[in-house]
Amino acid sequence: MNRDEIKEYLPHREPMLLVDRVELEADGSARGEYHVRGDEWFLQGHFPGNPVVPGVILLEIMAQSCCVLLLDNLKGSTPYYSGIDKVKFRKQVHAGDTIEISARTERSIGAFYFANCTAIVDGALCCEGRLSFAVVEGR
Image (tube, rainbow, N blue to C red; front, side, top):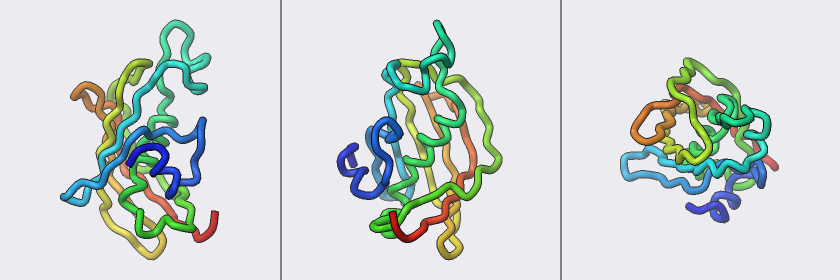
């Protein structure tokens, strides 16, 4: 899915749409990608001369990449974070990096979904953790 197709499922719009491409893999995992251009609002002042993607933004990129795991439940609904667990930041992400996200649903309970996610740049693990979402009817 490209950005326009992603917008059919996620309510996020620029400047908060933080995934360029996402696909559901044959094994049931999701693969997402975001290229950090360097002109994003979240890099302004973080940090001058050394732009580093803030951890909270990296988590948002990971969460948005999970969208294809929930496609059957997203039409007419909104996914909201319900938890962030066991997150580890391993390496900084900078302007010019392309972040590759891998996500897999661990389990679901009613409207709640739990996914294990990783963020990788140039083969190096940058972030990993368990994200959970509540899918709420309505936009």
